[in-house]
Image 1: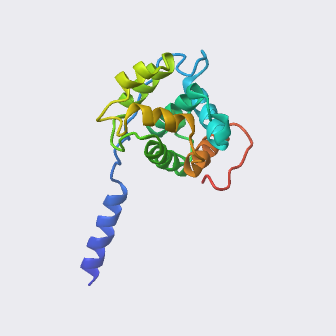
Image 2: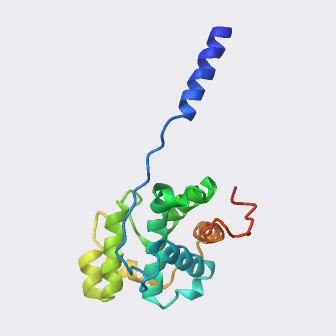
Length: 185
């Protein structure tokens, strides 16, 4: 009995040490959000602002594209970059859940590489036309026809996980701030 218990305890201890794979992570060019500011901070602020209230992106394709791009980028970046080691693991997990929620709402394949998603959204933001959408919003990365994706971007619904994850990340973007997020730990 003691030997079996010891084996179970050792197995659980080793499982706790297992390395979880880094989620798909995109890189962004400088100025990806229309500013020369830090892309990570811009992504956090863009997502927090946009997903707090759907009216902020409704009818504004560029704002919606930037918001979706921010969530997709942050889901990987917050976990992969050592810069964000002090950010709560719960916030990072919520951002991964937000990526799933946003992708489902827009029509992006759940398993699409983040770089492919971000590249397509950057191209669309640079030239937000039906022609560009037809060229870049294609399978296997996108699961719906371009016209339908544009319609969804034009009228993003309230996405509670994205709103919460964005808020949590914004509350922790500067580790020296005094803000205490009791739900983040």
